[in-house]
Amino acid sequence: MNSGGGSNVNIWAFPEKTPHILQVAYYHPLQELRAEMLRAAGYLVISVLGNNEAMGLDGAMVAAADLVLVGFSAEHPVRSAIVHWFKLHYPNTPVVVLQFHAWERFAEADVSSMSEDPAMWLAEIGSTLRFKA
Figure 1: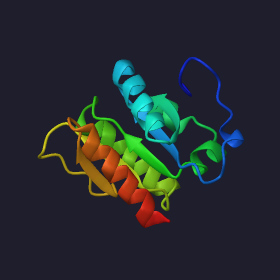
Figure 2: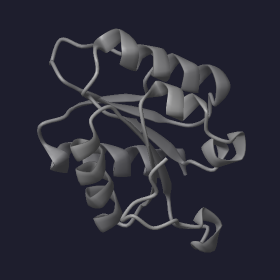
Figure 3: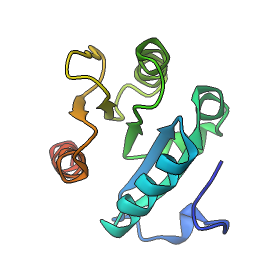
Figure 4: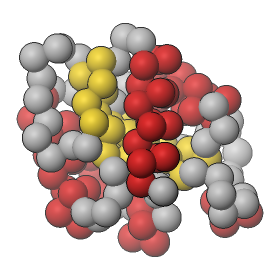
């Protein structure tokens, strides 16, 4: 698990009002870039690389997430599987999936967003969190 910047982050040390984003990425350079963008937007980010790492997280850490962001650098079935897993185990936590192709559909995701425009998916995350509140 990477909590960013090469340092360990105590997720409990942040104010409760700071939204917690759990990012599941599949390509390390994009994982770091998205985490930096999310932090710059004011979110607390816990980031993992791949489905196995995501499913291996401590349940309390996953439950503390206000939203799950699933990256686009894996095949559709791999990403669909993690969306399904989160919705099965954490049904009240919104899941935003970044699409690689416009034709991709993630029926269980709360939001699917085209990945090439960070402003778009950051806006989708903000909107989803406001709607959840």
